[in-house]
Length: 213
Image (cartoon, rainbow, N blue to C red; front, side):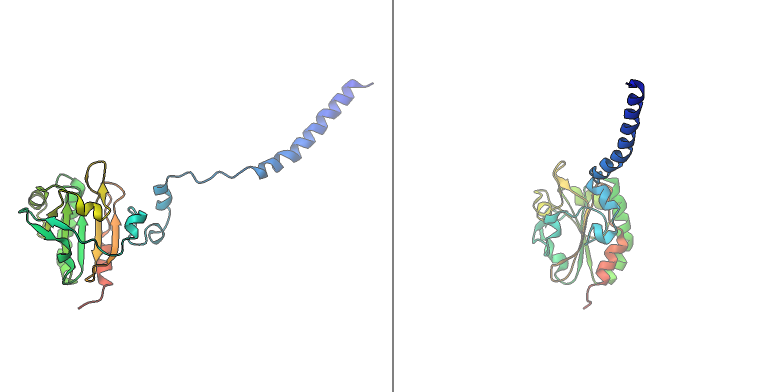
């Protein structure tokens, strides 16, 4: 018997089988799934796909489903209770929740809000802001020069009702809402991190879409 010839023939046959078998096996392999974190996947979407009520930010189901602005009580710089709904009792309102006077991102945002305040008011809207600490309104006014009303929510009741609680730090997440005169939330943006804020042109555009008078 020609053992050497038979052995070489067997090797050649095995090689042929491997050539045809490996591609077939590769075709049966499960494709790699998209393992990118949710925020990275959202970043690849268009703004309208990522967050229907304002580009970017957080769109948690509980907050996104909230159609009417919660009726809550906050306190002013003097510690007096104020119904937040007064802000939109006579017309639309922009309601901003912010982290605190010590937050550089918040002070920068307030500078931009103050610069656009005449434009916001020309659209018949009020602008108010809310943070957690009782002493924050006075300190933020001093540091930012804001001339619009600032309120505090030391019990976090309003912050929780609006679904903007930063539970790790027991303060508010940065968030911006536009409310119409009926109390309906027509624009919502909750920052994904401490530096995330909406483009103010989006906020003004939401106001422009509301009926006048």
